[in-house]
Amino acid sequence: MTGLHPATLAFGQAEEKLRRLTTALTTRAAIAQTPKQLIWTLNKAKLYRYVPVVPAEKRHHVPLLLVFALMNRPDILDLRPGHSFVEFMVNKGYDVYLLDWGCPGLEDRNLKFDDYTLEYLPRAIRKLKAISGSQEFSLLGWCIGAIITTSYAALRPDDGLRNLILLTAPLDFADKETITFAKWTDPRYFDVEKILAAFGNMPAGMIEYGAKALKPVENYVGNYLRLWDNLDNPYIVEAWHAMYTWVTDNIPMAGGAFRQLIVDLYQNNRLMQGTWELRGERVDVGRIRARLLTVIAEGDHITPACQSESIHQKTGSGDKELFRSPGGHIGIMAGSGASTKTWPHIDGWLGRRSA
Amino acid sequence: MGDKPKGNPSAGDKPYDPLEAWRNMRDATLDAWSKAMIEAVNTEAYASATGAMLDASLSASAPFREALEKSMVQTLQMLNLPTRADFESLAERMTHLEMRLDDIDAKLDSLSRPARADASAPKRKSKPR
Image (cartoon, rainbow over all chains, first blue to last red; front, side, top):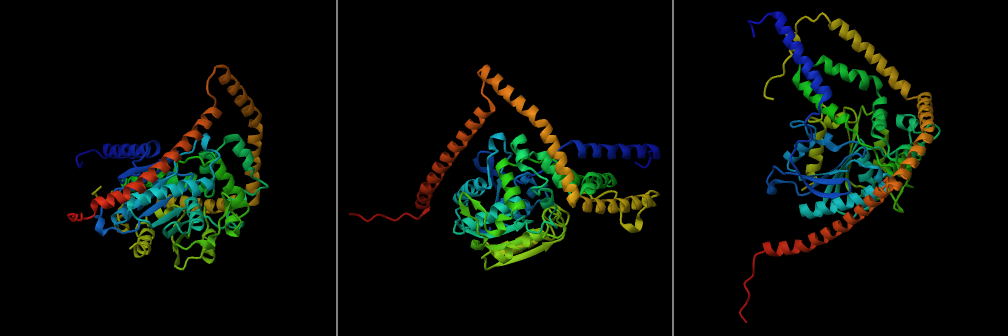
């Protein structure tokens, strides 16, 4: 390299930077690489079991089921080798399962939280119990997944749920001033019926726009400048590419569930008021008896802390902890500090309760 | 993957970058702009404006969409081809079938569990009669 003319060297470096930029912006990174087996399906939903790497006698006895949001792919839990929550937990000796809701088609537009909570999730849990041989299990719900797991924990407290972990859980919608989405979905401005009449399901593009518009400059300008500034660093480019692949791969949300999210929760706060009903059963969070860990992202602009805090006053759990982690809605689990802060805390908490 | 990160030298041996001052200014501007925009989108005015735009576009496109859907259904029926509604009805029936299968699968699981347990249990010698 020392014999090369400086101009040739500069040209080579520029060419390499351009190649990295093009690759990051136009190709899909290899994400969700941890080995797993498909063990159950229903409609578009799939239940995976991650291949354990720790011998059975050294593993935690209580299996862990991960439940992610309805409008994004769950690959964020297993972003890339060496930086994956799933890989971390598998290496720590957990028997890890993942419920992937899949991508709803127009034929699924009537699917509601009732179906996800009382049909899909209990069936997946039944299979998990059959495969693991354990009658007890832990649930980790993230974002909308936390609404489903909280409702399930309240409606089926005797189903064997031992530990419940809620990540950035949007459960309380009372503080309309702090929750930007609550302002946007105010019935004076937002006609959910008109959208669903036009599209059937809530389109992925509109959901993506909504999430990005909360921090428009950061998402539409700053994010790309960060890539440009770091093109010399292949490790930062690799991380950026993986996150970009996930962020731009959104899925629509079933119309029925979206209507409930807006009308029942954002507009009327029925879950925390104790008036939310799924299949005629009232969701009373006071009936939750599982041990509870709530993780709040201190810089969360999608689910502000006020949405996750009040569950702790209402739940009937005797063992509960509120953990605040620095970072944003996604950053606490997939950002650079996740592996040193959030993941070890979850492991420490869950490990002591999974024997 | 085992290589050390390139292009990320420590602050002490960082080469002179003539664009650094410009970059710092850019970042400060972006930061201020970002804060202003976050405040702007968190207002009733923004919610009202985006709601009105969305409403207008949906209202404007609704008649065309409905006409297109109607003519599509008529065309497909004329050609004796299944419509979206037919596929949706089929998909619903498929899901119900899947649930029935899932229930049967669960019953088989519960039946085979004691059998598996018996097979793995140490065998007792039967007493001679």
